[in-house]
Amino acid sequence: MIENEVEKLRNEMVEAMKKMIPIVAISPESGGKGEEERAKFVESLLKDIGFDEIKRIDAIDHLGFKRPNIVAKIYGQNKERTLWIAAHMDTVPEGDRNLWKTDPFKAHVENDKIYGRGTEDNGQALIGAIFAIKAIRNSGTKTKSNIGFIAVSDEEVGSKYGMEYLVEHYDFGKNDSFLIPDSGNEDGSEIEIAEKGILWFSIVTHGIQSHGSRPDLGKNAHRIGMEVSLEIDKILHEKFNSINEIFTPPYSTFEPTKKDANVSNINTIPGTDIIYFDSRVLPSYKIDDVIETIRGVIEKYEKKYNTKIELKIIQKADPAKPTDINDKVVQDLIKILKETRKINPKIIGIGGGTVAAILRRKGYPAVVWSTLDPVEHSPNEYCKISNLVNDAKVFALMYLNF
Ligand SMILES: [Zn+2]
Image (cartoon, protein in one colour):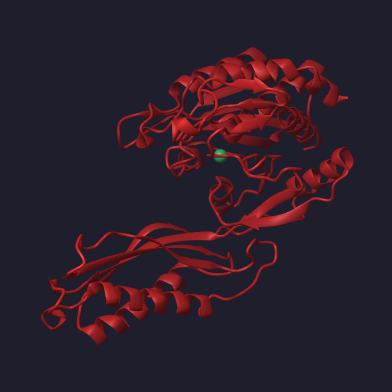
C-alpha cells in the first residue's frame, strides 16, 4: 500500500522541514532576499528522488532579484497528461518577534507540531508533495499519467513572478490538472473549486482646505468623501446582490477598510480625503461592471459639490470560471477522502487569493485542498506532523489515480 510507503518517510519529512525553514525565503518587496537559496534546497531534494525533467523557469523582478520557479516531471504510461501539485516557496515575514515562543527560522519540533515561519504555509504542501513522489518511486510503481511537481515564488505578494510568470513561460498540456494544497480546514473536509474576484480601490476626494471656524471659505473633502463612500457601499450591495451558497459568506462583499490620515489638527477643514475599499465579487459578475457603478456614483457627487473625485484601482482580479465539480481531479479527491478519512467533503468557494485562480483563468481544472489549522501568517505558526504525513498519503493516491 502506498500509504505505508509514505509512512516510512515520516522522519525524513520532518528532517527536510527542519533543514528548509532556516533557509529564509521572504520576498524582496517584504524586505527579504527572495527564494533562490530555498529553491536550491528544493532542487537537491528533487534530484535525489530522480525526475525525468527538472526545469527552472526563473523570473527577474522589478528590484532585480531572481525569482525561481521549479517544474519537475516523472513520465507515466501516458505522457499526454499530468497531475501537478503546486506549492509556493516564499513565506511572509515573521512579524513581531516578541510574539514568538521559539525562533521563527529554526523549525522547533514539539509533540505533533513543527513550529516556524512557513512550516504550514506552504512548507507542509512542498515537503508533502515531494515525499509523496518519493514514496511512489520507492514503491516502484509506474503511474498511469505523469507526476508533476511545481515550486513557485512570489505567492504572498501576488504571484507576478511566480505562477503568473510560469503559465506564460511553460507549456502545460491541455489535459493537465492541478492540485494546490494552500488552503483548507482542520479535518481536510473542504475542497475549494471557486474564488471570488478581487477589487481594491480608493476614493480620493478633493476639496478646499480652510480654518475649522470658516468652513464657508473651504470645501470639506472629508464630509464629501464619507458621503460618496457610504453611497458606493449601499449601491454596490443593492446591485450585486446574488447569492452562491458554496461561498462563505455566500454573497459579494464591499468593505470600506483603510482610511488615510488627512489633517493633523482638529481645527482645519480637510482639503483631501482618501478612503479604501476591499471588494470580493462572486464569479457571476464582471469586475468592470462594479467599476462602472462606482464611477456613476462619483460623477453624481462631483456635480453635486462641483469638485474632483478620483477612483484609483489598486488591485483588480476578475473571478475565474469555477472548476467543474465533475472534473476528474475533483471527483478523485472526493473519492480518496471518503475512502481513507471516512469524511464527506464539502465543495466550497473562497474570497480569492490562491494561485488556482490564475490556472482556472487559463482554462485548467484546479482544486485547492489541504488539512490545516488556521495559523498561517500568525506568530508561532506550526505544521502538524500528522497533517504533513497524512496529506502526503492523499497526494500519492491522487498521483496514482490520475
Ligand atoms: Zn500559502
